[in-house]
Length: 105
Image (cartoon, rainbow, N blue to C red; front, top):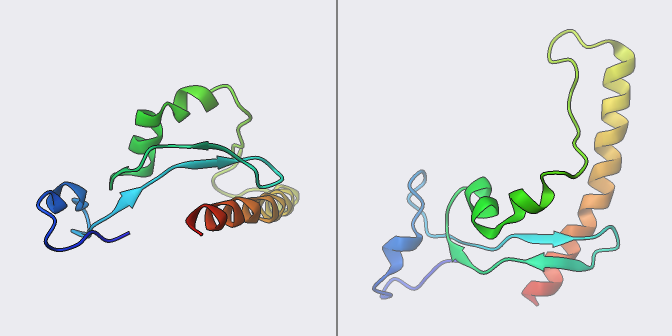
């Protein structure tokens, strides 16, 4: 979301990296696309900073993690497994995108 040029506190919302205006909200949805958490809107910042400030990092710290075991020279079976998991995650992730679209409308 871009803020109006005449807004006096517009510079608070400009990112340091790209010098563009941004307002962010963090959304957590379940596997069916139901919104479980929606953070307050904040001036643009890094996603991890926003997650920490919203308390999401603490809430999700004990959740499941996916680690890549091999960074270099992974065996073929591992690469195939990782690719299947990535595709399965993406097919679930699209529901989150639909939830966000619902919030915007």
